[in-house]
Every structure is written in structure tokens, then in C-alpha cells.
Figure (cartoon, rainbow, N blue to C red):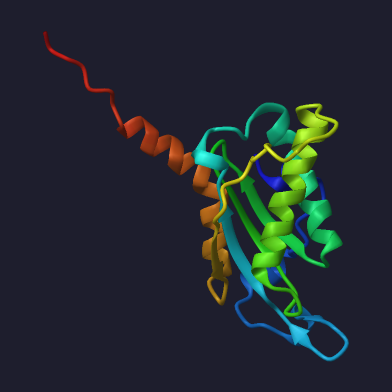
Length: 171
């Protein structure tokens, strides 16, 4: 399930810009003294890589990620929620550290899941949804390759799962 399927209208990329490999100044975002285009491919997993992102959690978390990113002046351009990990292509302004944004997304989304999905009212101290680490890579000129990878990840995982046949004992 992609984030855009969960949160309609979330992908702001125009097709004409996606196919054009030349970058113009209009493609960059701006702060008061800075023009920037900082895109990152971020992947993180649930605690112990358990398959916890399904059903109600999976439906709710895409919209939550988008709202949390907007609160930090970030934008999730592409994303995909798998049962055991999350991929996202996110714009993060240069005034923010990637680690602080990812920590904020993971922490606040875990609280949201505990309150609204698991219906807990307090004592979130023992509720660990996400593992401590994450993967991040800067996205340069190969943005279309990254987008394609994120979109096709679920199909590729299914294909690889089918290759792993259970070993049976011939006795």
C-alpha cells in the first residue's frame, strides 16, 4: 500500500518534471537565504523486524507520516509501507538534521499507533514500535530509479518469498 493510496493528493511531482533530467531553479525549494533540493531515501523497520505493519496500523500510518512531515516543513514525495519495513522518499530542509526528522517521525507515529490503534491512554514507556536504527541515502540525479524501487518493492519481496521453498524431510 503506497502512502499516496492512503493519503490522496500527497505526491506533488509533475510528470513533465519527472521525465525531464535537467533541473531548473523552479524545481528547488527555498528558505529565507537558501535554495535547496535535499531528497533522502529512508528505510526503517519495526522492532525485531516483526511483521507489525498490517491492517489498521498500515491504513492509519501513511496519513500520520504525512502530517508529521508537514509539521517539520518536510514533504514525503513517495512511500511504501511493507509488513516489516517502511520506505520513503522525503524532502528535508537543510536547516534540519535527517536523524532528528526520522526520530520525530518514528517516535510520534509510535505514540499515535499506541493511542489510536491499540487504544492505550497512557504509559507509552514500554511501547516500542520501531527499531532504533534506520537507513538513509541521498537522492541525486537517479530519483526515478529510487521511485521505481520503492514502488516495486512489494512485488519483488513476494517474488523472493516464492523462491524460498520449505525443505521437506523425505522420510
